[in-house]
Each structure stands twice: as structure tokens, then as C-alpha cells.
Image (tube, rainbow, N blue to C red; front, top):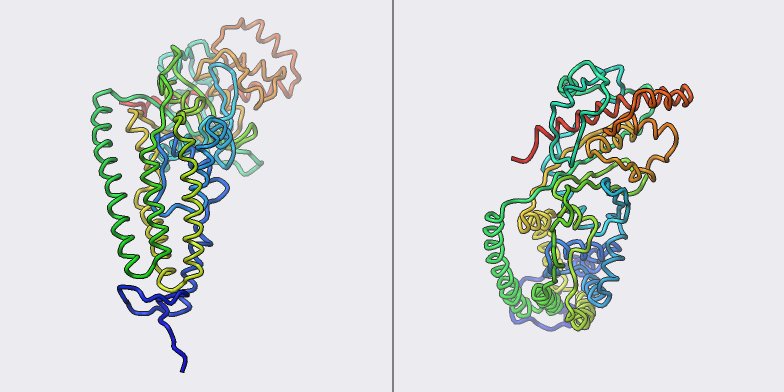
Length: 474
């Protein structure tokens, strides 16, 4: 009768120091394949590495990193600034920025980091959506100029709304309280969603407290990340799960190396180098349906959207060789487990489940929250739904007080009726005679378009301003 070795011993047939009950063969073989198939880095992993690095200031690696992640860190350390530039503008988080104040547009400099901070802000107010009027005939029209003049703005730079021409007879507060109107199903509308992200800074006293607590917790985390995996590795070795022990040991060592490799922040990090607030618009492209407007303290806004938030130390390229070896070692260890099967496969599957569980417990927004607290940045979000793009962009133009409409040229093509519409809603003074003469030069359909969009734009601007004012930072 042939000798039947225990399933736990795997393909090698080596008896462990600590023997436990055998597991079914099908379970042992299935468990060994799952991590090798499911725990692989995807195409967007490089961008994720750079995004977390921009916020935390150091490389972050889990105890059981995805296969290929360590190789991505190697490419980062070898590529340096060029890798940062490429990783920030590719992937699902790549986006375009329009600087309302300066009229320029450019790719977002920190795509993943911006998306993480924005998602954290929106999740705090996910239930709060304001629907902006889509038809002036269904709501009270004509906002009193005096009412606009008596309403101060919040967080918008140099807003002079007193020169906005009167268009209404009822107070805009009534418009806001009536919850606007329901969507019309008579014709198709391409609704536009605008998320407004307000940003400000906290006092230095609260920042010192936060940094002290964070420093203590980080040191405890580093110590625990060495002691706990080492103890588990010894236990896995006694159980005969040599491949899983190798994977865990490699991950723990890589995690320690990443924590010790601190990145440098550029000089003047998060400081404002201008004498005005920031106002920048972000979207996936010029023809998007979802938009993000960042207003408030220009320092964090400019650094998050427009500037590189870190620089790699000169010693980083020497560590690239270590991460190359660590990636190859992890690859050999995981393929060894797939060939060995037995208890080794079961242990690696348990390690995979534990890794995902720790990630869920820590929260996907933990990094963004820690960055905001560490740098004394306060953030608030509001969501508005517009019936069309013109009213949304016109409201931004009014509330920002910008005199240069060049920022919207790629979104709304410059033409005669756009110029008349902008002059109608612009705070810049213009004689009534001159404006009426310019308006009469348009076709009847264009004149009707200008009048309708002007009313919608003013109502939208007033509604947005009222909402931001009621929910301003205290």
C-alpha cells in the first residue's frame, strides 16, 4: 500500500515542527492559486503610489503588497521627477485645471492626491445637493440689485456684485427655499454637477498638537510593523508555511525601508505666493458633466492642483536596487506557494484576507484626512446641479469677479453672443446704450438666448452665494 503523505506537508512533503489537522486537498490547491491571481498590481498602481506619496511625504507599503507594487516603487526611485510627471497625468484620475483668476489651463499636477482629498470632502456632505433653476418662467425672476448689493460674499475674491444689472423682483432667498423646480421631461437636458470645495487654514496652535500626536503614533506604528510580522513569521516557519513566511518577511522589511525613506517638501510648501484667494476649476476634460471648483486659501489650492508637492532625496536611486530584489523575491515566494500548496497556500490566503481587512478598517480616506490635519487645512464641500453649462460657468464668472473670460474659451467657444452675454452678467460697467446696440446686432434667436442665459446665470450666482454664505467656516 502506497504511503499517503499529509495534505498539510504540500508538494515538498516536509513535516512541519508544529503539526495541525489536515485540510481537504481541493481547498489546499484552490487557496494556493487565489493570491497569485487576485493580488496583482493594476495599470493605475503607479499613480496611486505617487498620490499617497504626495500626501503622506513617505512611501507606504502594506505588509502584503500587491505583486508588482514594489517594482513600481523601484521605477519611481529610478525615474525621479520624470516618473512623477508622467504618473500624475495618466490613469483614471487625470484631469484638467482652469485657473479662473489668471485665465490659464493645465493638467492637474497631483491627480490622485487631489482626487483623494476631494472625495474625503464630498463624503462629509454627500446628502446635500442644491438644484439650480433650469427655467426662469417656473421660478421667480428678476433679482433686485439692492438685494444683491446687500449680500456679502464668502470666500470669493474681490466680488463686486453691485454692478450686476437688475433682473428680478423677488428675493433670491425665496428661490432657494422653494427647492427650485423639478426636472422637466419635456426635452433632453445635459445636467451639470458642480462640486465646490472651500479650503482654509487652521491656527498654528492646533497644528502643533496634531503634529505631536501624529509623531508619537507613527513611531508606535513603525515599531509594531517590525515586531508583529517577525513573530508571525517565526510561527509560520514552525507550521511549515515557508512561502508565506517569506512573503510576510519581505513585506515587513520593505515597509520599514519605505518608512525610513523620507521625502523632502519643496521650500514654501502650501504657502500662497500671491495676494489674492484661489479659484480653480477641475474636470476630466473640456466637455465633462462633473466639475470641481476649488476656492479659498490659494496656498493649498495652488500646491494641490498646480505644483509638485515633493522632491525625491538623492539616496533614493541607491534604494531602487533593493526594491528590484524585493519584487523578485516576492514573485518567487508567491509562485513557490502556488507550487507547494498544502498549509502554505491556506496561510497565504489568510494573509491576503487579513491585508484587505486592515485596509478596510483603516479607511480609504485615512491618508487624505491625515494630510489635512497635519497641514492645518480645513475643507468644506457643496454640490450644485445646473440645467446647463452656460449658467454654471457664468455663475462662476460672476462670483469670482474675474474680468478675463479667457479661462472658459476651451469650454464655450468665443463668439458674438457669448461676448454680449458676458457683458450682460459681468460686474464691469458698460453704458446701457452701448449694450443695447450690441444686443440688437445679434439675431433674434441669439438675443433670446442671451436674455435667458443672463437670467439663469444671475439666479444661479445668487443661489450659490447664499448657500456658501450660510455654510461658511466659523
